[in-house]
Amino acid sequence: MEELFAAVAAFFVKIDWQLVAKGFRESLYMTLVSSAFAYAIGLPLGVVLAVTDSNGLRPVRWISTVLGVIINVLRSIPFLILLILVIPVTRAIVGTMVGSTATIVPLTISAAPFIARVVESSLKEVDAGVIQASRSMGASPMQIIWKVLLAEARPSLLVGASITVTTILAYSAMAGAVGGGGLGDVAIRYGYYRYQKEMMFTTVALLVVIVQVFQEVAMRLVRRVDRRL
Image (cartoon, rainbow, N blue to C red; front, side, top):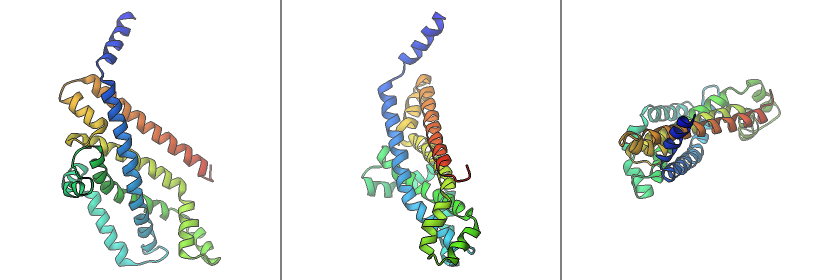
């Protein structure tokens, strides 16, 4: 038993906790800020996709087609490649191409199309009968969008949000390969390049904890707003 305690103590002593804490803060910062920006872009795009679809409230084929193609193209680009492609845009917006703040730009660009498709799918799951009932009562398209589509799709939107945030967190960890900061940067620079397995295991464990917290918060919110439960 004493040997076990000694091994555990030796494991924790080798960890640079200040560096890990800095990476933890940067990962949360990148994930939460880029999620907010991505939803500010992706949510309206998803609504437009659902509304202008052939079976939507206001079918407009050319808008749905053009927007769908643009979103599909952006979604098909691997994140690390997109990270490099948007370097000029990143430098123009934040003045640098490295660090956690710079990583928010490609994270937002990458996540927004994904969010748009998630929102579109959630809105299309709303019962058509509820929409028809709202129309028969004289509700305008904007009223149907705000008070019917988005309201009825809240549980599905929250589940999609938890998946999205987890995906953005994973992308932020990948950005560490090119100096993006966060736990991914710590894991690669210290855990991989310097063979400090303690740092690697610690960063992975923290990423798992963050994912579990996000998932649990989202599921609690879903249970609170889902009328079927």
